[in-house]
Length: 249
Ligand code: IPE
Ligand code: IPE
Ligand code: MG
Image 1 (cartoon, rainbow, N blue to C red):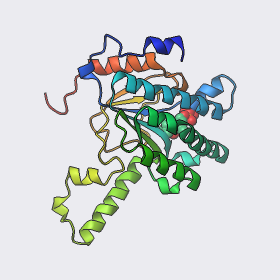
Image 2: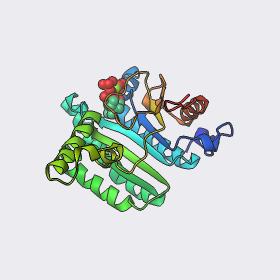
Image 3: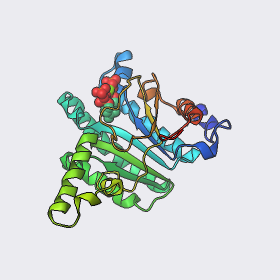
């Protein structure tokens, strides 16, 4: 661990514990640009991106944030060059296997959301095992969106609800927000309070469309592999300045 991390091991004194977000979501963008800037192949950026995510997870745990969700692979990311897609799938599988022990020791609950059935079989097996072995852990809930698309999540919820209506188990006018939420991949996880997107892009890119209704959005030009505790501190400071009105005055 670097000296820098040690300095920020505890919640910085200027942040108010009672005003921390309960759930932080991150769109980890900019790995490719980070690599390109140094004349390296894009995949090296993804490797460094993993290190940034590992430290953010530890940081959330150290600072007392209850839930972290990270966007790792979108339903649109399959359109990237096959070589990059294959590298990412292998990277996810390897990192998951390497990190499982630490997640168990650190009491981390990991969960994956997305169309998991379409992932390589061997990755699906690592995913199932990690979710099963960490399901009772309570220090932090860590959700990884993999082959995730917000529209696709909403569609599969609609299909499941329509099926219940067809079977006569549910009346159309009984479908409320709670019914809908139970059919989302994120059932049981509270909505994100803060969305962070790195590398300056001002868009949602099909991430948690339903859940993001009232999230505060923080965008930084920093590229994901450079997103460290000092950056996270800045994001939380900005969040604590915001006035969340939820439609009220
Ligand atoms: C985010 O970084 C990682 C994934 C989408 C898997 P990018 O790979 O999108 O990096 P840029 O946006 O091309 O720099
Ligand atoms: C969003 O980043 C997806 C992930 C971070 C996994 P992209 O790089 O795919 O998004 P766009 O293409 O810039 O919208
Ligand atoms: Mg990108």
